[in-house]
Length: 302
Ligand SMILES: Cc1cc2nc3c(=O)[nH]c(=O)nc-3n(C[C@H](O)[C@H](O)[C@H](O)COP(=O)(O)OP(=O)(O)OC[C@H]3O[C@@H](n4cnc5c(N)ncnc54)[C@H](O)[C@@H]3O)c2cc1C
Image (cartoon, rainbow, N blue to C red; front, side):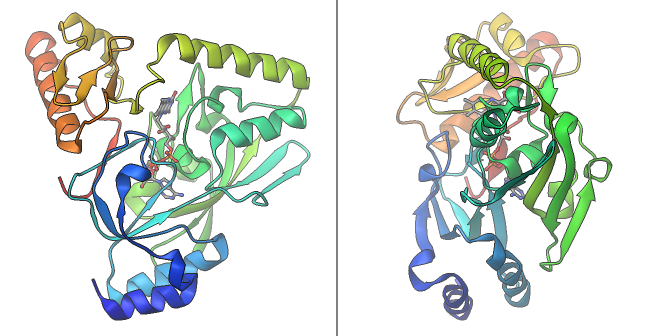
C-alpha cells in the first residue's frame, strides 16, 4: 500500500474515514469476503477528487453499492474500495421525475416514491441493492426493470470528469449496462414515474413482497439469483432437474426452497461458493448442454 496515497486520501475524507483491512463480509449480503486494503464511504462531493488522486498514484479501486450481487474472494481486495452509501438528502422530486443519489437503497427510493403517489418502482422495492448497483445491473423483477424507468444517469469517468448519460447511452440489456466496461462510477439517477394512488402503489409493493417471502430463501445470506437466466430456460429449474437441490460444498448450498439461489448456511467461504457454482454449472452442462453463467460479480482474490 502506498503510504503517501493513504495520507492524501485521509486528507480528503478524514483520518477516521479510511477503514484499513476491512472485512468485506461486513459489506456483502453473502456475508463472505476477506479484507479490503482500504474502504471508504465518501460523500458525493469528494468523489471526483478521490478518483483523480487514484489516477495520479496509479491506485487501483473498485466501486460497490450494497454488496448484494457480489462474491468477494477470501483473500480480499487489493487497493481501494469505494462504497456508495445512502444519504438522506440525495433525493428530489420534480413532477413525475425523481432524482436519487446512487447510494440510496431501491427499497427506500420505492417507498419515498410511493409516499408522494408516484408509481413505477414497485418492482424494485424488494431488490436489496442500491440505485447505482441497480443501474449497473439493470436490475429487474416481476416484469419490470430499471430500463423502463431510467431517464438519465450521472457518472464520473476514471479521471473524475462528470458526464450525463441518457437511457439509450446506458446500453441496458438483460442484467447489464455500459457502466462497468467504461469504468464509470454512478453518482445519481433520474427516474420517470407516473402519478397514482398511494394506497394502490403500496398494495402492489406488499403483494410482490409476499411473493418473495414465499419463494425465496430470505432467511439465509445470499446474492439472489446466482446465475443468469439462460436463453429459453430457467437456471433454477435446470439445477433442480439436474438433481442438485440442496447440493452442498462446505457451508455453501443450493437452496432447497429456490434452486436458483446459492445460500451461505452459516460458515461458507467464498471458495466454497465459487466451487459450488463451478460444479453446478458443469453438471447442468453435462446433463442438458446448457452453460450457466454467473449473475453475481466476482471481485478480489480467491
Ligand atoms: C435476496 C436477494 C434478492 C435479489 N433479487 C433480485 C431481483 O429480483 N432482481 C435483480 O435484478 N437482482 C436481485 N438481486 C441482486 C442484487 O440485489 C441486484 O443486482 C442489485 O442491483 C445490486 O445492487 P448493489 O447496490 O447491491 O450492487 P453491488 O452488489 O454492490 O455491485 C454490483 C455491481 O455494480 C457495481 N456498482 C455498484 N454500485 C456502483 C456505482 N455507484 N457505480 C459504479 N458501479 C457500481 C459493482 O462494482 C458491481 O460490479 C437480489 C439479491 C438478493 C441478495
